[in-house]
Length: 319
Length: 288
Image (tube, each protein chain N blue to C red):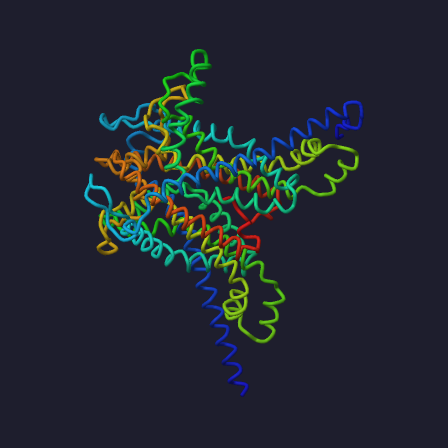
């Protein structure tokens, strides 16, 4: 009797042990995957790293597959500029939405509006790309594009024409649409975690809504909002399909936002299948490595800011 | 410390106006975003619906230049690649979620959480290149396996993180009650905790699935694409997003027409599934 009980106890311990081993094993496989990812990217770009070095690759301007010349500066700048345009356009709107949903909207509208904004984040990027290429670009080429080129083109190099629609500007605009829901989802959480007592205190003193936002919400939520913005920046930097379909794909350093350009993801998407020799392929993977490093840095920064703002309570994520 | 100039009532009307302006601006930013959503979805519906017919779901693409045909092969292909991705991501993501939720306070758990957060932020095109280097190069050919592997890498962090959140919502008293009855820990987890968190786990998985199903970039150099039904998992395979991309950048009007139809199908599958899942099951705080 006692013996049987003892055996069943041991059996259950074995079960627990096996279960734990499986859980730990599969969890560790995620870590292995991450390490493997970094290692494999280095391994596959070693030819390019050996040829150009890590730093020279990043600072060289020429990207010329015909003459076996690979420099990443133009596309890195293109990546950062497109993402910056997106952030500049998206941030005011995203924060406006977040404040509207948390503080202003009537309670019965809060859920539906948040739901619709989140739905925008669920649209696949190829659909954004399709819409942007066939609807937004032709529209941008007309009134807004002409206006910018004619009004500012002569004295601000950023808006120098000619403008054919497919441009850095188009990429920035569609990226802005794509990151608004991401920024606003995180900002919403951060703003919701501002203590009610502080808002009530200021309201009791006779402050208006704007003053509450200005003097309590924004200062309190600042770190988290900055985190949300950086998270959006990270997403914009890595976005491939929508950008590839509207940016025009020319790799040349230019000041004009109205000119075609390219980003790291767009150049990879366009040229990877056509990479005819090993060094070319290796240089493209080298680019991907640079992109990975940039986005890792950005994400780590953003996460720690958001985390410190909500004290680790954020679980829901932008998607 | 706080500037209390607003206490003066002299410029009350100005302050009120300012505040009203702010309310209008923030409301209109919400409105603008919702309008953009409807414009995009509406246009996809308008162009897609006129191009959708039964052939689209049942036929292969016609030879270049001939009108008609469909994307049956791409839809089947997407399902196959997603199935491969799920077969990898489901156990790995689930058990990672279980590990994080049940053995929560260890150094390894914190490290894994950090790695998962970071992995979720890696651009999908980089994941595609990773899969290319890991699977396509050793195999010497583009394949469904490579595409599935790439999608698994996309799905694992999304699923694992959301699964952890879902499992954490299960109250401790439930676990304790089960353990107190002498049920071993592993059976408690499988038979008590997981069934209780079932809704959240399903939501988590559907979110990961919908996200992976809409991805194009990781499939460009892994699954590649194909104009025919797949002939084995070790060969290039067509998928819906890549097929849409190929048709969208092609020069033919009929291709564009079909690209819109494909986009409509993709939007209906991903957006609607996510929406329904969120609305029905996502009452817990995972899906927000």
